[in-house]
Amino acid sequence: MSDAVLAPAPNTTQPVKKLRVMSGTRTTGALHLGHYLGWLSNCLELQKKYECFFGVMDWHGMTSKYKETADINAWNRDIYAEMIAWGIDPQKNTVFVQSMIPEHIELFMIFANLTPMGWLERVPTWKDAEEEAKASDTHNLGRFMYPVLQAADIALYFGALVPVGGDQVSHLELTREIIRRFNFLYKAKLPEPKAMLSETPSFPGLDGRKMSKSYDNSILLSEDEKSLKKKVNSMLTDPARALRENPGNPEICTVYSYHKFFSADDDKKWAAEGCVTAGIGCGDCKAKLFGNLNEMLRIPREKKKELLNNPSLLDSIIAEGNEKARVVARKNIQIIKDYMKLGPKVK
Ligand code: TRP
Ligand code: SF4
Image 1 (cartoon, rainbow, N blue to C red):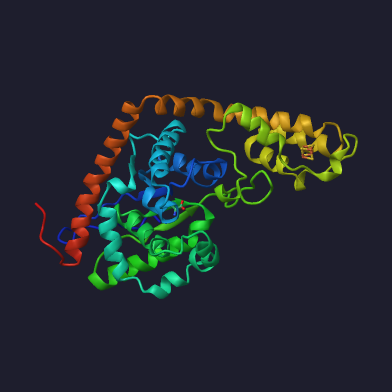
Image 2: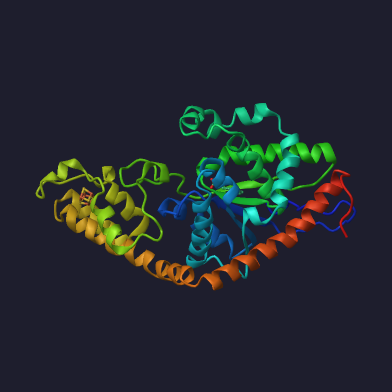
């Protein structure tokens, strides 16, 4: 990866050597533990080593939530505050709201022309979801072109490394194809981005299915103490343990799969051993998990609350992030148009 080169301006010989990280999350609701494991924890690590651009992707949110635009606006702020509360540094990185940077749409339109519809028809997130899309009134052009916009997000910042969850692999494949085609057509040198998958591609929700907003089985990153306790208590356990004295199998228990991710080794051992020997009850096991999760969420939850309670501070952080992104986006869209020999030069 280290030999990848970022796009130089067409008339310069000075390529930017340092790889850039570009990623984002679509705004369709508050972030949950699945987002943390599959995405945010990766971003938190990457910001230590790379120049990072992180977007709060509200146009992507709108492809399915176009009837709830007022909510989208609230989620933008919520997610932005959440990312900062969990340790994304808005000074060190560029954190922005997608719709505030109009160049995303400009590049989206450029890419839309060089993307054959057949490429989009084959993307599993479209192909496999068509019936659901029709039923939910989201069988629309915006949703169809979702991956083209995503490609534009990445290319606009010359992103080379893209931390994403496993469900995004096909979108990244398409991004690479679009960028390859752009480079071929215009003799350009936009970097072909690589997906960086987290080690936890899929994470179980309360009911054991994948954690997802649409299944209503998630634990939010800002879950308050009371509802966190309720949710942990509602988790499915090994039915063999309906009686306290019966031993169980932690490997088929959702509570234990959470211990694996969120508890320290001694607690994991305590739970596994106590389960197979019937030394502990499921109530004890859940209480321990609740304590560990609550401790992990406690400080970010407070920080987020503080930010949301201070709207003028949050607004100024967001405005600053948007401005930083805008400066890069303006410069890069010009480079991209120069490759295409398109449009007057903006001085
Ligand atoms: N599609 C991504 C998701 O579902 C969000 C996203 C939009 C994104 N644009 C991006 C991720 C660019 C990485 C890079 O979460
Ligand atoms: Fe699950 Fe813990 Fe109960 Fe075992 S003791 S079934 S791991 S909750």
